[in-house]
Length: 107
Image (cartoon, rainbow, N blue to C red; front, top):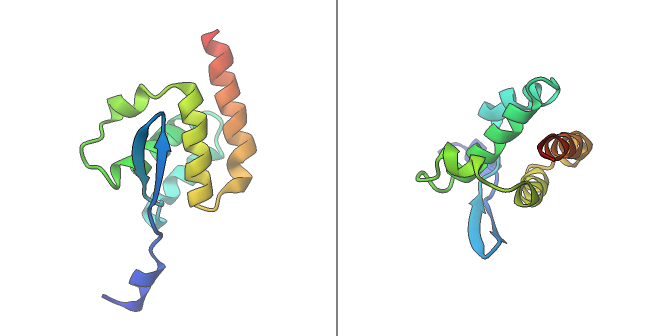
């Protein structure tokens, strides 16, 4: 392995509703998701994929259907953890705006 292997991010374990989840940091190959976050028409799909890739990286058995069933309350906590893990605190306002729109659309 080259010295670049030391630049890989470290996983983080969180407990959400009594479920232990290992979050894997996003990498250069996930940059497409951040471009999509800038497009309001693709933001929701991008967030969905960010959650999926972050969880799937540590547990290959996780399915997209399971991710889709995460409640909005837990999604908000999970997205906060994912953004912090990846050093993306500046995306928080956009993420929160989308979550609020999704909640309002369901009510």
